[in-house]
Image 1 (cartoon, rainbow, N blue to C red):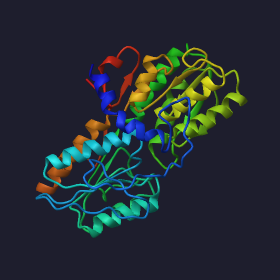
Image 2: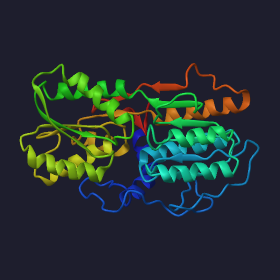
Image 3: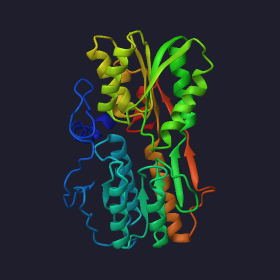
Image 4: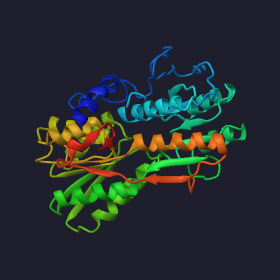
Amino acid sequence: MRRKLAARVAAGALIAFMGACSSSNPSSPASEPANETSEQTPGDSVQSTEAGDAPEAPADADGGLVPIITTVLANPYWDAEADTAKAALEALGFTTWVDAHNNDPQRQAELVDAAISQKAVAIVLDPAGADESIGVVTKATDAGIPVFLINAEINQEGVAKAQIIANNAQGAELGGQYFAEQMGGKGKFVELFGNPTDNNAPVRSNAYHSVIEQYPDLELLQTETANWNRDEGFQKMEILLQAHPDLTGVLSGNDEMALGAIAAIEAAGKVPGKDVLVMGFDGSPDAVEAIESGKLLGTVLQPIVAETEELVKQLGAYLKSGSTGADAEKQAMDCVLITPDNTDEYSLFNMS
């Protein structure tokens, strides 16, 4: 019941998702550009602006302004991240605005500049690149605004106050082991790789490989980059199926690419879950639904809701006392494997 309720809660985000960077319907990938955002509507629970516009600062509350800069609002994962941060911050007495950089470092810089000009007391940021985001985090910090990073990290410590991510290596090892076992320890497979500027992509891939190399009869045929995107997952899978018609497995760096691959497999006249086994990562509502229908082998849940709640807790502590209370700046939360055996324990990016 919790999973079904959460799926209904997520429906609004999923509808928006159909017309943006990728399709929520695996059988019909969308064709619109990935960098579109909606116009700002005052009073919306999640606000975004057209590229080039600076978000307006809401009226100050006692705690001050904490902007939330996420990746893609039309994706249910990042939408859940933004909604969780907004609710938690407002519960602590802060005002917020929410916007997305769409993996564009220049747009990210514009949003951070807006936060600085509006005298934000802190910034919550899901960074647009591990190297590309160091400069904007440093700029905000130099302006006296502490930055708290969620979901993705930067390749430097000492400028952000906290960096909280999922334990991607641990999660990918869980997923890789389950994939290898379900493949029977043999067969030919391909890999869909995420956004190369995001450290999560190589970390997951390397952890997958650390498990697969223990199975000499599992043969990796080819790796293709699909940038976390469902449409690109579909397109790259079409190419892979033509090049390797005898492949029997797909290891994907995230659920969106996996769902695109499932659509391509079906379009090629094959049966996902039978002819080709597909493994995902993230724990999105669409992925859990695909597991229950037998199309997706499994996924690895990133506990983004718990991560974001912890980040906001540390942000509040820092603004009160000058310390986050954590032992380290970079922190990782363990992931959870989702299979047909435990989908009934799922709620929106969380497990009971």
